[in-house]
Length: 218
Image 1 (cartoon, rainbow, N blue to C red):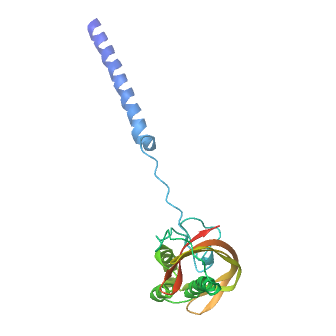
Image 2 (tube, rainbow, N blue to C red; image 1 turned 120 degrees about the vertical axis):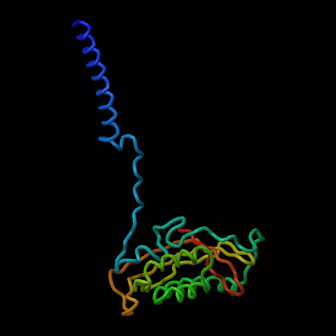
Image 3 (cartoon, one colour; image 1 turned 90 degrees about the horizontal axis):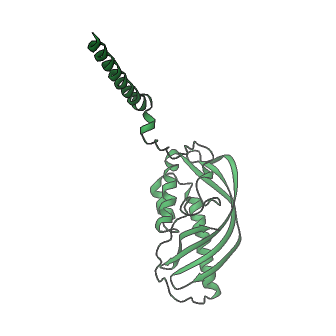
């Protein structure tokens, strides 16, 4: 009788320990799965722009630095490392004129209705990764019938900082006004935004034309 009592006591004690261990394991896995699993990373914020205010996200933007909004790494320039050269007044005017025309070509391209035309348009003014960056932005909006209407473009100052036979760097300050543009109706709509832009632009000479290959917001 006494042996049976002690045997039951030992069995009950062992059973209690086993239940305690199992309960702890169950609590740590089934009831709190996050405790033993890495926290899921949050998705990057995605801007879903409707048919309004796309001017906040495209074209040169004074709030953008580094890679975004068309601001990207420069191409390795042909003739890099050459000694600086002196330019005549007409040669300097040519660089500045081509730079202004390149911006105008970009602004006008945002009114075309298809991507092949957009690409061919800016290919006469931009090159390299910067051109591809503008194309990627346009691909988000032009196929949806939304473009941009840019007006009141004015240049406060453009200086040539450095130049050699095939490359140049200009310091430009300009401002412009922009509204969204209905490509089907060919009419601007939505709010009007005004931008003040101060950039350092890198250009390369291809044939007789100076083309923009990189920009850095100052």
